[in-house]
Length: 115
Length: 115
Image 1: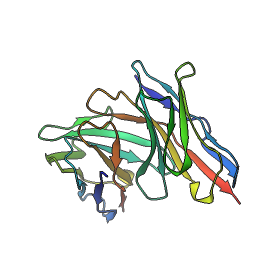
Image 2: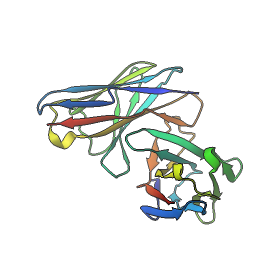
Image 3: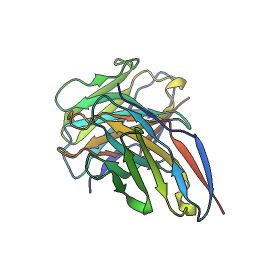
Image 4: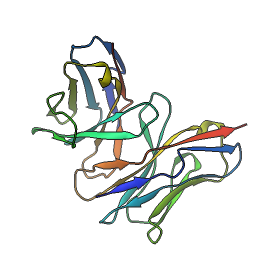
């Protein structure tokens, strides 16, 4: 069974500081991994995805994530936080090639950006 | 890009009534749609996988008679919460995938409040 663990339900950073949101996964097959962002009372917006190509994935809004198989991790980073980055971030894993694309989500990390 | 529309975005109903939520893929056909439920400040819980022209596949613990899912066309899936009770109050989010693309696009969600 697949699972995702997000360490830290709340993360606070100063504006301009590095953002690091942690995600570890468990999967018996090569995983597809995703980061989504959710603003209050809205659906989820895809930030980036890993689908077995390049291990360093660049997404929207300056975010990137690196797939590390040895560490079973897919941490999300951004060099310089902006106030507009304050939101809930979800890491997700799927089997990818199954054709059903069932996603399993982590518990989420709420990012707070301090002025 | 792929767009998924959900309607209504907010609905308030009395206990014992039924509520229908629609999920439409606006510019693509989706053979598979997914319904998630999100409790306040929590992650998304997959409820069921909706397959066009066939019965939905429900996750363990989700009452199929309580949450009726119909996927009658390639662009529309509906979730009906039958005999709603206050504990059914939640944020319901649907998602769909463009055929051949392993990325889910999410609707903006529907907030259900049962009085």
